[in-house]
Image (cartoon, rainbow, N blue to C red; front, side, top):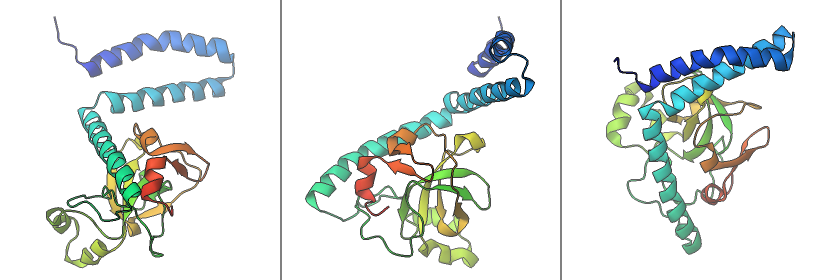
Amino acid sequence: MPHINAAAALQISMLLFALPAQYFISQWYGTDSAERIQITERIIASWSISTRTYLSLDAWADRLKLWLSKTRNWYYGENKTRSGDNEAKPHSYFTESTHVHSPKPEYIKFRVGQVIIHRRFGYSGVIVGWDIKANTPEERLQPRYPPVKQDLKDTPHYRILINKANGFGKSTAYVPEEEITIIMGLEVYHPDMETYFSGYDGSKYIMQPWLKKLYPHD
């Protein structure tokens, strides 16, 4: 008997689901073909996002790492806020240090919760943290920034949750300020959104209390 993996099982399920789904859509939305097409496209998009999110080992690994990171940040953020200790933990990289980012320098243009578009790669995402300059191990900075771009290391950097609807391979990014621009009215789909944010007001995402303590001026 041939072995059926998870992806093949999902494809078979989608094929079996297609006929009854088409029947119910036609019953619910009558003869309006445009509306039926829109509903069908939404169902296909939802299946596609679910496949990339829940059948990918990389996605589960990223989710676990972010959960561990946020649990650690919550614990240290609570303790540092109460004690008034604003010193960063050693060896905390990619905006993951748990010190309170205050005061906020005027040259930091963007805020946590804003939705961005990457100028070069075109993906969208939401800002979940920032550093006044690249806070990355030196061995990772060297190949990323060639000699002609070494000055970028000293510019603000942002941690991004990448919108899963883009179909981009990565789930997070750490980018310099010059590579992103703000976009309004676009919602982001990512399995960890509720960890960082409590809602969306149409222009930006509202930070969870633990995150607001780390970025009080955003």
